[in-house]
Length: 591
Ligand SMILES: [Zn+2]
Image 1 (cartoon, rainbow, N blue to C red):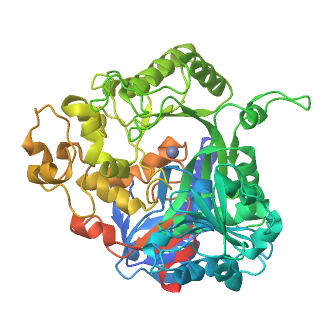
Image 2 (cartoon, rainbow, N blue to C red):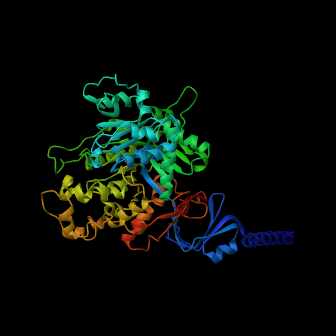
Image 3 (cartoon, rainbow, N blue to C red):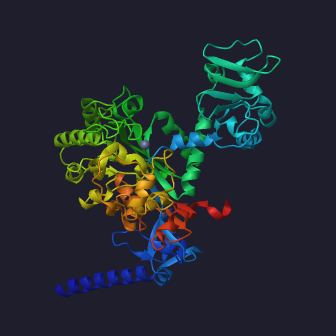
């Protein structure tokens, strides 16, 4: 009897060993084996691999070429030509629809002549279905030789079938074509409106230019964007993101119409992108997802709709305004505007209520807070909400966390709150930020190092279209705290180019190679900001943000190795190819 058991145990052990050996030696099937790259996996150890295999949109192996050639049987081998490869970038704070609308609005700023404008508008007309409006903005006849207002004929030639509506640079005049005049029913009989003027030729015929209040005569016929136009706007925004290597955006403030546009494109398989959407505040869309309806219980968050293309699992709230317009709420008055402490846009009770609702219904909260008072308010709100919702993985976020009182910075770590920051805001605002804040408060502005020292992560974003979406510019800003001209290099630059507050107290060492240079991120940190830290901030760390076995095969191939080149070369680095779920969704060479 004992003998039988012994034989059985031996048999089981042999079977297990044989199975193990069999599966170790039988190569794993893969769609593609990528070789000869410098693959920055962004895993916990910052491992660099030279090969990676993908199957069915996911990574099945990462490691050395020799090893993977033995372990993997791939249908196709792609040589990466020694190029640097990174996980697909994530923009933790952007506005996809706004970027798209800016894309379908023709940018006429700086156009040197009517003819130049006609060329720009014509390109747009060619891409627009007959009958739909074409919009533009930014023309300025003072830049033209004639210096005179233009007329509709120039536009009629390039757009006989699409109404065209072009706003002047200052927003105080519109230039339209004949089709638009027809739609608006404008004839020589149409009277001027009060506070407005219809520009006319010698014979009294409208020339197509409308000044001030007269603009309404045409603009009231501009329809809200159709589903088709919205789809086009989103498609153009996505194209631009992919070109910059962005594979996922945390879309900060969407409504149900935008969500339907995303779903529509996903259902048609025309959405090679990922969006982690935050609902834009309380209201209809929020109620739709969080409130019970006669048909049944609340829907709750939307998770990974369409093969991990769309999440709706956050709400965007606002505490205050922005620093540039002195709307950011400060604890003490603005240094350059005594008596003004900025403004709060949502009262504390409503914020608390919204945070409670979100935590009760499984939604993350992302709150815009720019000034030190704004940040203090939302930290207090989060703190009291967390006391009532103990034990949970909430990852409450503060969007921008731009100016934070030094003693509030450690509270982020203590409360588990994530500061979601935009490095290029720093390098755009640095010229005047100190004038607004003064030499002491500025030490808590864009204070990445102070935050990182407390042990938090900083997801990186651009806040496009306010800033350029290009994450490479964000990475450059994060590691240099200089503009693309390399300024400031030193304290002399600060005197020459930067607006400062009156009181002294500045340490010139603070500006050696960068504005408050001690707050820089390292290259590794900057890359994490746009990869796995951003993934974590959107609960996506098990599928995005690093190139590891089992994760989605989202990655970018760069023209230069941004971990190695001089910082000054980083802004000129291009994305050569972008892959999403193992498929190439952008290639620079095919442009
Ligand atoms: Zn924003």
